[in-house]
Length: 350
Image 1 (cartoon, rainbow, N blue to C red):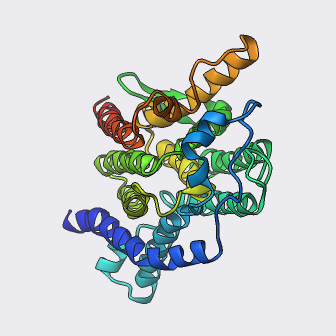
Image 2 (image 1 turned 90 degrees about the vertical axis):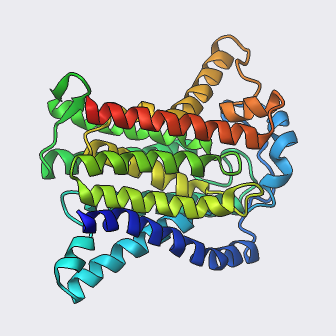
């Protein structure tokens, strides 16, 4: 039990301090290479201009580097491989216990994090070299969706054929067998969570929300005795908190697609591995709200030729209403924290 506690809380703390240590190196690179958009976006996702957004964030968007998400996944990968190598070079009870890289629990999450983050990194690089419009200068939305679908199919294949998983747990009901329907469900969930990546739009917003989400899944995995997943989720939370330390106002850098794409895809994998995917919309409610606001806005503009929100996603709507950005961010943190606790409780009690 003591080693399990050290494995989860100790390695999470280690990842946090490693991220703090790596930040000056990343900061120097991002600023020396001017890794930010050269002009602010001029087109909204559904077409039309972005005058309200540019008034609020246009100047900062072209002066703050992207790719801060490198700090998160680099810290996680380093800590994961460090303890795996230590267990191989110095085999023993302690090193074996602290190693959390296992075939049935963390191979797939680590693979997903690396691949998703790499795809996002490509998009970030293209964006900082592009014109700064919503689509131009980076991977198009269609291309990113296709890549997420491919990654989702790989994950679904591993679950269904390698791990023999074809069912989900429903709180207060029990196990529901899906058969082959498990595969499209997995892909749809990954797409839905990925769409919530639009939350990376205010200083500190995405970091605080994702930290609560992964901390909740670390708790779920721990109480289900999935210690390796718990450690991996906690290490992710530690890396996110290191990023958040430098992303709170005024942000030193933004998470970028390399952070968002990696975190949203690996979150899907962890939710299914812990068999707590049904409570994912509760634990990750801020992501659902962000994605939902964009979808509602697009549908309303398409069908009724009017906007529901002043700006979408919804965090910019609150800004446009006159809320200071820090108030929006902190209230999202509070909502995310409370709902993460509720979702975790439902997953464990139900």
